[in-house]
Length: 449
Ligand code: PLP
Image (cartoon, rainbow, N blue to C red; front, side):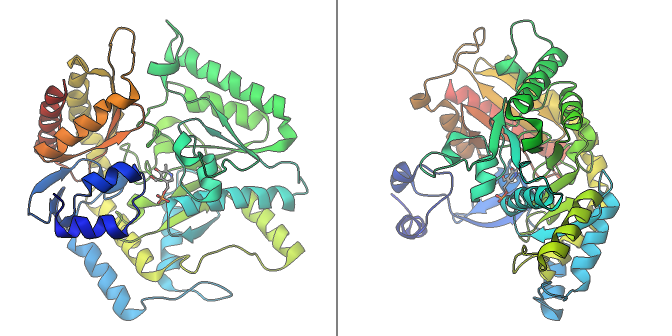
């Protein structure tokens, strides 16, 4: 029996990433408030938010300073756009701050409101750059199977998950997908991580040569793949891939929408994983999700090409009403200030060993084929047979069952495609709360057996 709010929801809302027909029976859990790493439903029941919302609420749910930063900015200048010669302090200061903390030299920053918009912007800028440089054939962008880059027409095309393409007539042309670097699933018997990385780099090189290097402009990747399964790349992966990209003048785009701002125990995921990007997409934790905000950080060669293009055609025709929204920028500035002051990134590095220790213990569980993680992000692969790594029938919905038991235990985690469970708690989680998370998950897995 659905509560009144849940019934009204079913009548009115379309929910992303939901089986629309089954949802009519189950309805949603309706949440009302949050405190620290916990959220509470309308009946007052607490849940440990083990996914930081959607990989984003790094500072948890009750940060007064962020609320205050938003209130102050809203009272002073709630909105001002930055089209056609206008500007404001929060956008300028935030762009400066991003340049200061960037893992590679950054020339300029362009703002938007989400990760999808950031990656959409990446596609448009890559194409604009090639055209401005007189290389109109250099347009193909290589993404990866199981990568996740968003849901706009271009970013959903980059995404390498079937649900984002089926019935949507995607991907668009000029987007290709190379293999997913998941060692547990895709390495050959006895293949080391380094050998697997070298094989994937060779495959990428073959793809570039087959397509013709003069037609390939960029390669995009998340440092740790999020929605594809919280997949940590094999040793040497980005070094090997980066060398291939450099050889063929293929620019590297880091999608830091999940890994940016401390998730892996470094300010940016690229720094931890040997990735050397030319441009970077960020969103989510830039405001700890208290306001929608995304950004693309771009290098000097891209800026010079954009200048060239603008000299040719006049107006630079890209940007959103909310590019650099002052309230979102003010909240982002406060978020970054808190990350520094509270040493949040160092805190992740300090908590990582305990988090990974509790995670690794799950591999003893009869249902768990692999438990992988880095920093404070992890993925668990449920299998029907540990020896052969055989997966359950899709219709068995084993991970979905485990997630439902987690919910009954008072823990929110996320079921990803292919019987995978993701863990990505707020970065402020304490050691005791990490224990609470894994204790609850362990009980839920026992009940799933
Ligand atoms: N890129 C990555 C790596 C993501 O995980 C996501 C969302 O989860 C996106 C892009 C899309 O961001 P948004 O949902 O804010 O559009």
